Structure formats: C-alpha cells, structure tokens
Amino acid sequence: MASAGLFEAALDHAHARGVLCGGIFQTSTIAVCPNSGVSASGCHSKLIVGGLALVGIGAAIGYFACKKASCCSSRVNTKIKLGEPKVADTVDLEDIGDKKAFCRCWKSEKFPYCDGSHGKHNKETGDNLGPLIVKKKE
Image (tube, rainbow, N blue to C red; front, side, top):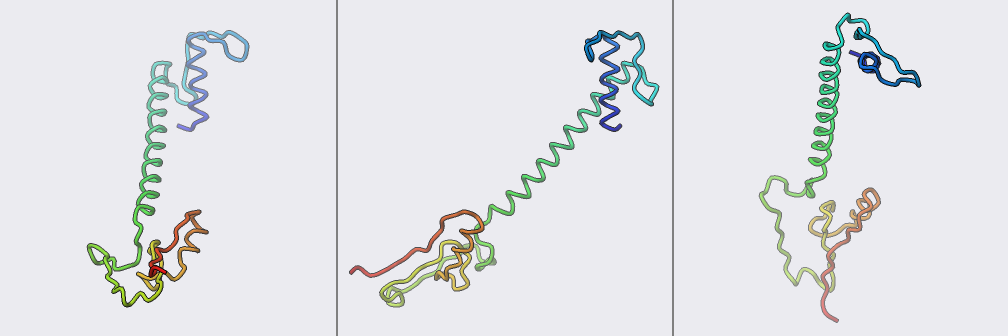
C-alpha cells in the first residue's frame, strides 16, 4: 500500500471515531480503506502492518549501513604483511644512525620507516598522525 493510501486510511479511521480534523468535527459510521473495500477494523490492521513493515525496513537499512561503515574503518593496517598474524620489525641501533623516523600510520611504502604518507592521510581524515622519531642523545 502506498504511503498516501496509509495516510488517507488513517484519516478515514480517525473520522470513524469522531475526531477534530481541519477545524470541523466529523463522525462517520462506516470507514473504508481507500480503494480496498475493507472495513474500519481491517483498515486498522493494515495500518499497523504497514507501519511495522516501514519500521523494519528502516531498521534493516540502518543496520547494514552501520555494519558497512564499521567494517571498513576498523582495520588500521590495510597493506603491510597482511598474511602474518602480527607485524613486528626489529631495527639494530647501529642501523638508525643519528636519527630515524618510523611509520605509525601504516601507509608508508618504506614500512617500518616513515615516507611522509601520513600527511595525505591527515588531510583526508582530519587526523593528526606523525612518525615515531628515534635519535641519539646530543
């Protein structure tokens, strides 16, 4: 049933009970759902079923939209060693030299070292990520 039909059915049902509508008190002994020939009691059932169907459809759409949004944003690492259970890298202190920047955004092509990819990520998301900088004491 179209939503306009539901609205008209609700008005007809309200008129059957004698309510104020448009500034005029109206009563009717017979209320019929538009274009259906159903009595007032059958019309009431149709309104309830139609309303529940609309609520159910809205809930389903909301659930799937939320699920889609959360599945895409929950994973941080989307490209580095995805086949491994845990990504752990070791760097010797001798290899660091005076200073080295390590990636924390998981977007670097030189992972575990930073290549500045966090800058693009920050612009796209409004985030404030930056690298971990390890340096020798001066």
